[in-house]
Amino acid sequence: MTNRDNASASQGSGGSRIVAGARRTEWGEQGEVSPSELREMGYTDFEPFEPFVSTDLAVVVTEKYGKDPDTGEWGRTLVAHRVGCSQGDVLFSKGDLILELSPHFKREADQHSARIDANLHQFSPVEEAVENFINHSCDPSGRWDWSRLSSLHIPLIALRDIHEGDEITYNYLTTDEGRAPGEDVGEDDFVCACGAECCRKEIIGFRPLSPSEKKELEPIVSPYLRSILREQELGG
Ligand SMILES: [Zn+2]
Image (cartoon, rainbow, N blue to C red; front, side, top):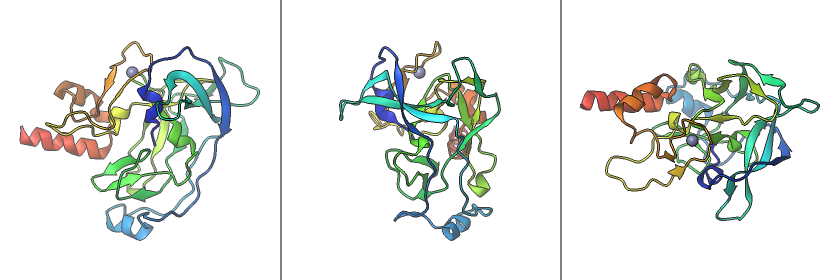
């Protein structure tokens, strides 16, 4: 789901252009966990569905996160955008639904997948799906709503009013487990370039956070990370 190459580079000087509009996902990919398997895994209310994706979104090239070290190209990010709107126009009000994650799942992680449970990773079968361009921010504009997980509906909700051109972001620390105790650098670690006043700079996942930092994030982290927190509390 994430676009780590963007987030790993240093901050640029801004500026962006639109390269793609919102696209819907399609069904079917090899290695995908089937609906009946998902129901057996405990997602008892799951029925295949077409995820909601607002049409007021666009993927844009941005210099904010620097260039991709592998391709040498500027990174991309998801922004609020509607033709004819100008800066200052509110496209999403606080609490609005922005999009839902594609209801496709694998047992193994990949670059863009999001961990839902120990052996379940959400992914989009469409490479250019807008959900793959949501960057991390330490002061994000959105958060995932986990309340409908039994049906695998995972909506992204606006945390504040979002204006034309604003980035759609969430806090990766609410979904990424990060390095295990004793592990050196995790492959998902990166230096943050979100530009927020409260920026943590080094993003190394949920596990290595201090107990108080974990407690602070607890209300919005994924149920999987909450289960890790419970285990750690029980383990002392
Ligand atoms: Zn940051």
